[in-house]
Length: 167
Image (cartoon, rainbow, N blue to C red):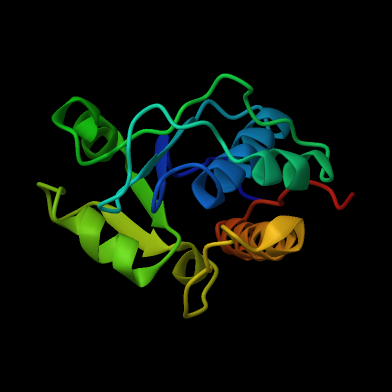
């Protein structure tokens, strides 16, 4: 197993930063804690309807609690289009998006050509998007959560790391 994690700062991007990116952030934070890695994990929204200050979806909280991962009760959404948050884009050495559209949008804000930007499914060696679970109830969030976890397991395995233990 590899013992040098290649990234110091990871940014996870979805539409409004209240569900998918927050679940992926929860998994990554758990992975870093379990592997004693000093990696900064952030997330944000890039869609036109992204806003600062929205609460994380209760369904996202519930879906992650089923995995034994507690999302922050006080975290608020971050609109990456705002100038005051663009440092998150610039500081990240890996940006993972939930869809191809998010990837296209975030690239508009990247000033250097050597930044690694992948969809979560590309990170896993796959193609496609992870669909927004909003308005699909807890089952929709479970589907998105499980796909996010699957992609992280595959992507981290490709880097020589093992993901969280199966629960």
